[in-house]
Amino acid sequence: MTNDFMETADRVMAATYNRFPIVLTRGDGCTLYDAKGRTYTDFVAGIAVCNLGHAHPRVAEAVADQARRLVHVSNLYYTMPQIALAEWLVEHSFADRVFFCNSGAEANEAAIKLARKYFKDRGAPERFRIITMEGSFHGRTMATLSATGQAKIKKGFEPLLDGFDIVPFNDLEAIRSAITGETCAVMLEPIQGEGGVRCPAPGYLEGLRKLCDEEGLLIVFDEVQTGMGRTGKLFAYEHFGMVPDIMTLAKALANGLPMGAMLAKEEVAASFTPGSHASTFGGTPLVSAAALRVVKILLEEGVLRNCEKVGQYFKDRLLELKSKYSFIQEVRGKGLLLGLDLSCDGVSIVKACMERGFLINCTQEHILRFIPPLIIQEAQIDSLIVCLDNVFEETAGKRL
Image 1: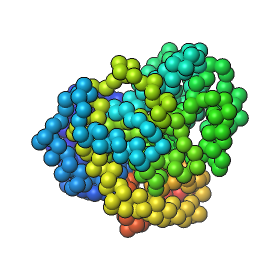
Image 2: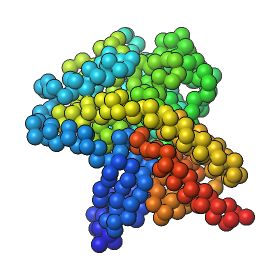
Image 3: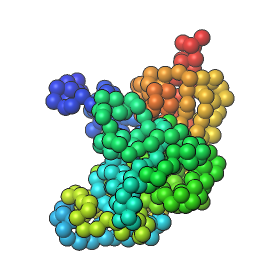
Image 4: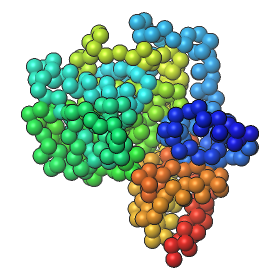
């Protein structure tokens, strides 16, 4: 039966993914079940999406209740869940205004458009270029693809859109050198996720804020992966003693329902006027009700505290493995966004862990990325560490 499902999918669906050979049918917390009845402990969380785990009863209740009331009417009208969610996000962040959309790429598109329009409205239409970072990932639309600092993701889609200058991450002088009279903003992830869980050097983001203030530039933080508690705080910028001018969110905002948001300070957000930007499905009553329940759970059920505590425990256990295996080059990350940089292939390790009942992720072919639900417990981490230790022992034996 499982093979039949996979054969049908391979026949009728676009071949844009190399899917693993399992068909997942349901989830509960940090556990997933496949069509054969096998269970898996989930350290991927839908790629940093299901921060509250799978089938959270309070989120399911909010979705079911709203589905019986009102699902969609478009943004031509006010709806109560959307208003309440926007108010919550403003109250809990640096921002004054929120624009809702459907994904991280759309949120980043909105940020790019807003940064450009802000300067046009200020009488500086020549300032349209945005500095982005090597190793970054901002999405797969043409604008966000052009902004992304990874050649492999752009291959085959040239010519790319003009207006993006890509410099090394963690290099303030490179940013300074790239600034011209056409520059309007610097756009970056405070911690690069898909790029390999690369963290900012001490003082880098604080120095960036100072530099942009001196040069009159906007800062756009792509917190699509780092936001909504992933690093132990609601938003990653809270770790660094500075705030951006624009911030994008998606992924975990509605715990699996498609939702994105762009947040901005009042002065900047004022450049979005009626008709300047829109989204038919942005912030529907259904997804807004889900997201509103998600953000409340993050604070009410101690999820952020768990992320910080268990994240540090997880990092310490990974460091124990590093001390044992020479092919582990570095352990990095914050909260429950952690990476293990290997000097060997990581994809085979992901497959070996899956065969043992653990779902993990590999990025850049050699970096194991751990992004479990923020409700993960130490006992589940211990089980994964045992699994990794066994797989690494086999890997070490093959390398000798």
